[in-house]
Length: 120
Image (tube, rainbow, N blue to C red; front, top):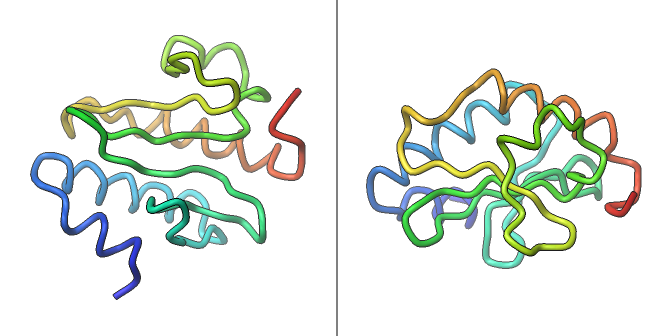
């Protein structure tokens, strides 16, 4: 088993279910993305470019996007920055909070900007 998959499976509920669902949506939406274990987190890469990571932190699961500076303003109300300079993320405390349509739309937009710098 890959370290990234082990990380996901060792999480307590409801975080494991959330992360497994996110993993399925990401891999369905971006079939070329590879799941790797970087910085002690499950991270998705397309080629050598990081796309997003999944992390269980405190009482939520974070899906962080490095290319958030290039995302449409229509996603601003969904994304959290919390004083981070580059990364913005979607946060989920329950599986029911996951809006697949929003996640898929962001993933597709991030894929369009994968070759750009993280900075705008």
